Length: 435
Ligand SMILES: *Cc1c(COP(=O)(O)O)cnc(C)c1O
Image (tube, rainbow, N blue to C red; front, side, top):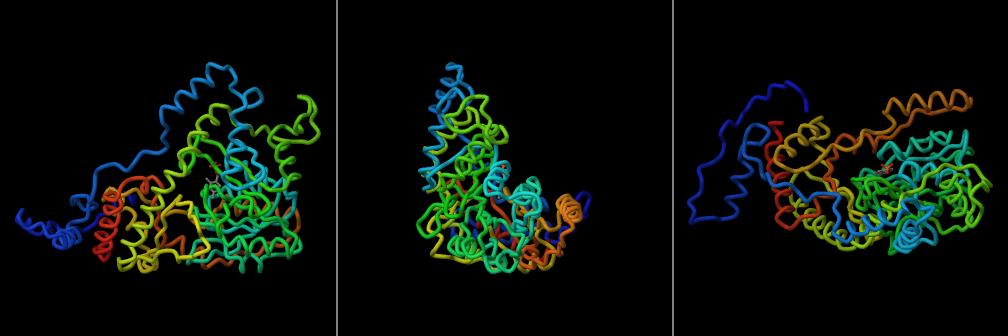
């Protein structure tokens, strides 16, 4: 919110006279709604009902949590729920192996270390992502190199990534923003051609598929998050999946203070963190995995309906369709408002839409503009005495300025909820000139 900004109310009471009750013609209602005063200016919001709550769990999960409590086996070193969930989640993502870890940030750290990324290496990352994608690179002593995203998809552009490869590149990190898979054929080919690891950041992409294959192990390693907002959640948590037996062993050691599977308690053959999940988290995640196909079907149906409704609204530009995306993770619903973005009014739109009762946000600021990262990168490259070119990422600049996000719980309701979202977007855009 911009505090203290005086906003002239140009349409004080622009609500047209109420239609007679006998004449409830829908087009009239829509027209009336679009002309009615924005909630931001004291008008009636499109909706006041809350959207579905997230995260959520059923009674079975409650009972299983009590079982863990009563069993006394609270940690995965004594219980078997984390191990069982790891097998089930690996199967779900069509991967040979899964190692659970404390969160999605440390999943990236572990995956990068397992891939051999270390001090002075370069890792190519998109700037339009959560800060953890790039922070994890710095946390293993490597340098994040930003390559641009495609504004049509918000995803790392394989051509831009290829152009950013140098002799120091050790890995490339396609991030499946919003749950939409990156072009994993192109990235796998890039990895093979240049001998670099492909680490998928799939924190937002549980269940997503590229050409009929689930993400995560289509590159060398893939990471997931089970943080509160994610489509599968235990409050906190994460996982790394891979098809490579050797990488799986390294991940196990990294997550278990350097131990090896089947080895002794004080047999530390490697150095590692303690990244283990608790059995409580595994009990919750088992329930989340059980529910995911159903919650996902709801999100997907609602996203498709919303896409078809917003496709008709002038000023809205939706991500391009791609038949290779055979399952979209639906973590976020993204829409771009190019004209409003170019006018610097995206945030005003977000405020107005939120006032209409729709949960939304302006999303990421490009990471290439984050001062903490910039300073770390400057310090690191100076110490390493390696050059660092100022990133040129116009695609990221553009989407950072004109994109609006709807978070996934907004897609967990019914058709009326979706129609409210579309009506609110139309209403605010219909009065965009007043923003
Ligand atoms: C959430 C997220 C992460 C980090 O996961 P945490 O579990 O919050 O540490 C990393 N990358 C992306 C793209 C994310 O959305």
